[in-house]
Image (spheres, rainbow, N blue to C red):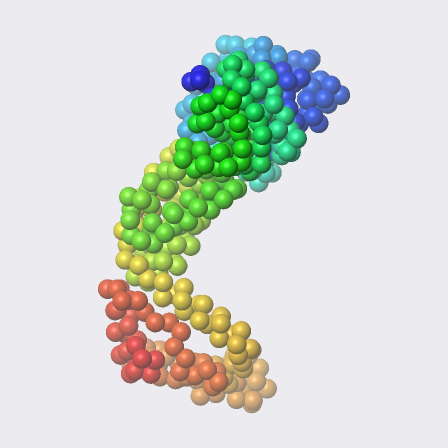
Length: 420
């Protein structure tokens, strides 16, 4: 087979060849008229993966015969943007296509503003995220937004049939497309992934006639395809492996799964958000700095974006994986919530109640409360739980250096009350 993937070989070069997105390709549509007239504005294409965003950008450039540059927001920065803009000053009608434009941070998006506004470039941005949230308002106001729809079963099957009928290499084979359910399911509605999986399956069968069934597709996919679908089952499998590797103190496995997510185009904020949760849930008070680093990591990657954000994520991941672990805080809140659900809304003890009015004071609100800072060591023993659940131990410090210090402190104060 060719080194060029089937999806690339089958990429349409005109609107008439495009499967799906009829609301954009129909002769009466705004986009069709703009392309045919050569008067295409800057625009944002918003839709799920593999539904035709890159294809439409290529069709536009092909139809209007314009110089065409492409950048990926995962691997490109301001320097790359400026280089294209500088080249565009000496060319006419340049089209700059930026894949996953939502991954550009504010400074990267701002670098496009002047050139778009002055018509130095015609920007086409592709995004899987709502541009209202992920593209800054100044840039968005200079672009038309077009929404691409998910591909349906008939459209996806049509792509398979089209490939068998038109691809030069596939036409040389005898292929019987007996079942398509597994192909459609594993592709997750992504046309590019569908065609490339289709080709892998045909190569894997490697016999004539080539009969494609759901069982064969599933078997070959499990053996040969490392799928990463941001909204599918594999997405949850990989994030699970990622979290469990950090929890299991294996920085090598953790950074591998991190790389899998980055290469799969995972949202940088999604990864960082999970690290903040993990820092508290799985590291906790065994290393309080973990939460500080994870929180700063989240803020940093929002500002920096890809590709440099990968370095920040790697630092945080390896630090968390190499930290001592404790889920004591996580278990404590679980126990506390279970107790609340079991016992209901218990009354706050009178001595702990706020007493802003004379009536409340007359009713003994706040009476006999002991102000901790008035006592030696800023501590005095008193009951803080409702009578019905007094002496309940909810937080049990983990067995690690830092939490053993906490355990020692609590023992010195409560003298065995909670069994620390």
